[in-house]
Image (cartoon, rainbow, N blue to C red; front, top):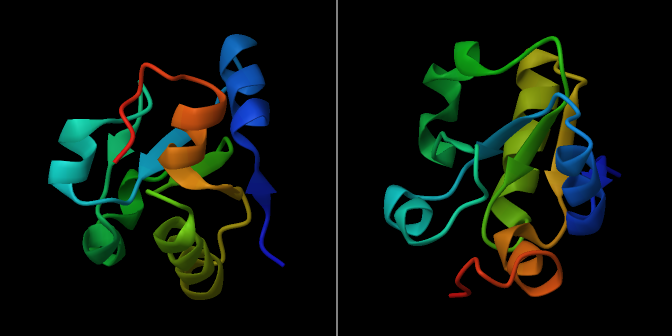
Length: 107
């Protein structure tokens, strides 16, 4: 089982000012339509060549539409790069929109 974080738990961390890096692995057009403020866009296909942009000193929360691509990213980063500071946003930006921030558009 891969480590996950609920939208509510992420919201709490952000409200408390916890140091986390938000990495959105969706496509640019999806990111342009809606995003969690402060997220860095690294599309899943670009991840292998942009690994150096990931934080090693704080938790990384991986985000996609429903949580599938971000789970793929998490598995890749764990197995290929040995990263242990990764969390998948359960339900993705869709769950974030429905359960935490309704101002974020749903698609």
